[in-house]
Length: 222
Picture 1 (cartoon, rainbow, N blue to C red):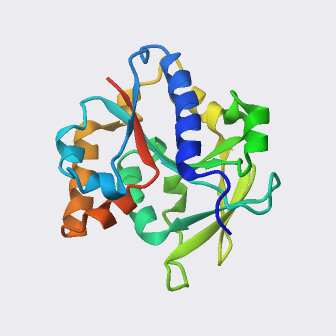
Picture 2: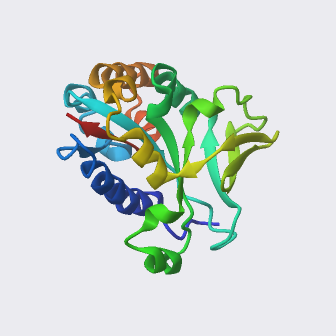
């Protein structure tokens, strides 16, 4: 069944709330949000992903859209795939608390309208590093289903439990006063090298490269 609320809609609305929250933190008032080029856009200048990554510290988020059923009820189900997860784990290996899946519990506009402008109240983060022991998918698509029932998510087909946390509370913790962000977040060199690896592995298939970056963005603090 097709999605009712698209991944891009969720990314734009929830990303704006996350950015507003980060800018309220000490020393982060100049933070900005970077949405990576993807799909057809990437074909018009994939190297810009490398040359234009700004200096600063990055929080990396992979946005996911829930399946359309069940509507407005847990468990909300999401799909992740092995290739994307392995790409994200390359970053998470360097900074475990700087790379997350974003799991918004919104698959109808009715609920979005009801909770707006506080969509973070029912948006949950799954730390990518917590999936570093996830076994490969047993299906030919290389995909896993994530059943989200806070504070726990179960990744199937073989049940693999992982904790999830409210997005707003995670941001508050990561950017708490006195926190040394350089020891928590990713620097721009790491992000650029990671993007270069994805491009090299894509072997010139710009659409495939763009698909790997679908839903991925960083929040940069300079």
